[in-house]
Amino acid sequence: MKSLITPRLVLREWEEKDAGFILDMYSRWDVMRYLGAEPQVLTDLAGARARLAAWRDRQDDVHTVWAVQDRQTGHLLGTAFLVRLLAGTPLTPAAETEIGWHLHPDAWGRGYATEAATAVLAYAARFGISPVLAVTYPENAASQAVCRRLGMRHLGRTDRYYNMTCELFST
Image (tube, rainbow, N blue to C red; front, side):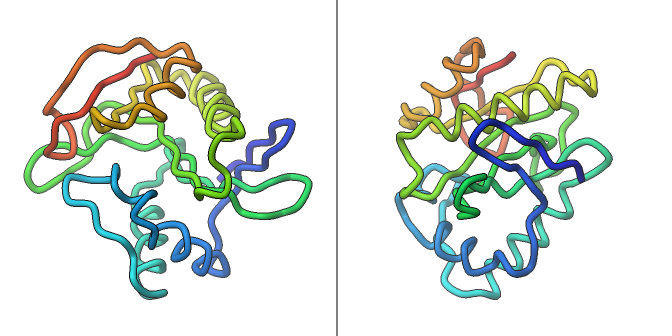
């Protein structure tokens, strides 16, 4: 996996030693409330390690899930990803590529999501991936604002992905 560098961030491979941060971030309802058709918080390190394994299963030569890290302090801030969207029952990879981000609440409101996602979109462009889609809960105004800052177009609501109704954005 290729690391990505921005002025303030390093997007790098997740490591086993990061499981504690994964547990901390994804055990918070304010992070999880907009993730998946049936959001559930993580409750233990085994769940964090399972999430790490699931991310690795979604990777290929181009698609990946990065840890977002502060370049200056080395502190982990969240997750950024470029993966195949999931559709159908059971959920299986679709042809379309999704960009996304999940940040720890301590990192909210500082522009990190936009900065990380800008790097991910540039990465996608280098590999000729177009369009790149984003899906959000209809109520997730913060992520929708990031999509708009990235220059993504709102295409309306869809039920095609994750077995739920989402707002759909496209590059």
